[in-house]
Length: 335
Image (cartoon, rainbow, N blue to C red; front, side, top):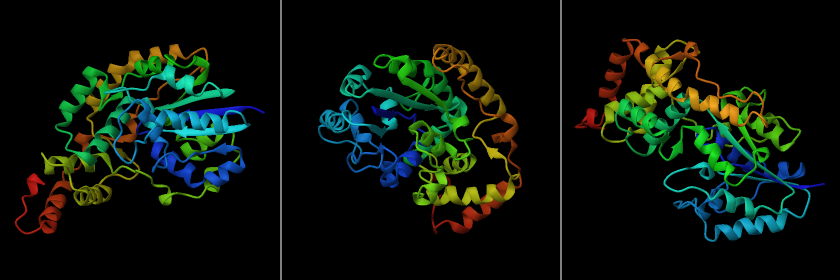
């Protein structure tokens, strides 16, 4: 019997919140199968552990994070079982990043060490980050947002060039200790992405045998085009959530069924794919020895409704609803 630590480092926007919420909510059941999900600070994810290297705001940061790592190692490294730690902040690159060599040293007492990182196609990831930023602040013009991200290979401090992220992991971890997961493949598991992680942890359960947290909808993003339309109406202020909901209701009614919308035009998505085609191929080559066949799966244009394909009939209905729902004297075009 061996001690094992599985460190799930994200990335952001790969269902990390859903995984953290679900596993923490079911921690007693998982404990029966040899998996411990620790409580660190006030969050269901173990974000406070990343504050050893990254300055995190309340409620994420904790006091004495290195001591917390040491306490976990003392409590779990000398006994059989799996310790599961999850925080997407551990994969952040800017403005600060984790010292991977120091982290590896803090957990060196475990018999087995595994670092797990989910990656999604850059087009999908960039779109999801845009939506997350929209919750907190206005993201600015979409074209500027895309151009800046493609030029830098980074968006909001997060890697778009995954070879840079993998090299960061390798500063502390052996290639055999790192496992990359293609997000698009993981969500196609019969039990979804939670099922993928149950398999990784060796837990013989299906996702539907776990108690759902928040009806299984942790941090679910609205329809991308709803965010984009609401942002354009609200600029330069952040779009109100009720406005996003209103726009989404019209899109759901007026768009073809079973077609996912995207922020991008077809040419923009092609440009994003071309920008990262070579780095993605390089990443596949870098991990070939330990993960033969690993590849980032691109967004599938045939499944998407692009920005320029929105039916013209939707706009008058949205405008009419905006006028009806606006408070008296409100300036609709400034949020």
